[in-house]
Structures are given as C-alpha cells and as structure tokens.
Amino acid sequence: MSALEELITKAKALQAEGHTPGQISDELGLSMETVTWLLTQPKGMEAPKDVHIDWTAVGSHGTLLNDMAMMMLKRFLYLGEGGAMRPAGDLLDTVVGVAPSGVPLATLIAAEEGLKLAVYLPAKHSRSEAPTGSLSGTFAAITGQRCIIIDDVVTTGTTLSETIQFLRRHGATPVAVWSLFDKRGVREVDGVPVHSLFVISRLG
Image (tube, rainbow, N blue to C red):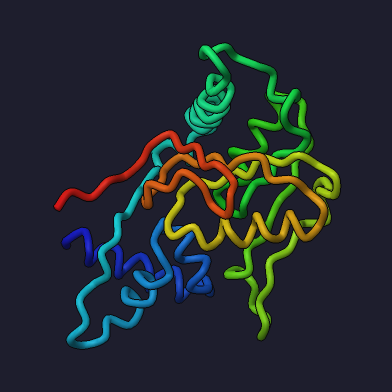
C-alpha cells in the first residue's frame, strides 16, 4: 500500500469513527482541502500538494513529548538579545493550547514556567450549523492576559488567525505563536510572530 493509499484509509477510518473533516485535518496534519480530497477523491482532480507529518512516535510517549515542549520553550527564550535566556513569566501570563494537539504541549510549557493554561477549541471542531471557536471554561480565562499560542503544525494559518482574532476580541494580547512544524514558512500571522522548531520547504 502506498503512502497516499494509507492516508486515504486513515482518513476514511477516522470519518467512520465520527470525526469531522476538521478533526481529521488536525489528526493527520493536513489541510482541509487535502482531507476533502482524501475522503471524496473526485475523478479528474489531482491530489492537492501537501505534506503529511507523522509525529506519533513522539506524541505518544510522555517523555519525548515533554522534550519537544521544552525545545519549543527554549527556542523562544533564546530569542532575546545576545541569545541570553529570559524568564517566560516576564513576557507571558497564559499559555493557550489549540485543541487537540497543542494542548499537551501547552500544558507542559505552562507547568514548567508556572503560567496559566487556557484551551482554545477551533471552529472546525464544532458540529453546529454556524461553527464558531470557543475557549474551554474548565481552564484559565484570557481577558487582560499576555498569551502565547501553542499548536503542533502550521498548515494554512487559518486556525491560528482564528485563534488570534478570538483572543483579541476577548481582551487578550497574543504575544507569539509557537509550533513544532511550519508547512508554510510563515514568520507572522495577523501581526503575531510565529516561532517553529521545524520549517518544511518544498523544492521545485
């Protein structure tokens, strides 16, 4: 079975389990356009150009996941002048994890730095007729907070833009976005700097 066939099988299996296309997009680290193609494969239409990132080996192991979260944290802390580390608490109040995959990373970073934890639920996960994003009421409020946004993969930037606008509408200040992988090579989204551990580039 080819890699593409495996993705089609995975996408259809997730759909059969009740996942929405948005959830499948997050689960597979693919754009919504790609997920739609995987689920329907319209005749005469080529597969969208996308990159699948499988970081299950790290995400399924607590110690390795913590190592990745600490790498994200250090990547940001070393951005100070002269490469000198600075306490994250000097710049941030709250770590916002984008559900689902950004949440464990955000939790580990918040615990390490003694910061508050908020969880953002993107609109693409909503099953309502007019889907909207929301903040989980179980975790921290964001009004008046300086926030860092944590996600695993920057695919199109749409979810990050949605998250940033939500935070601003609710009185928070998004300071930066941290991600593991950036498939777009973006440096900022809506004026908020993006810091990724790995940037995926296509040649040719």
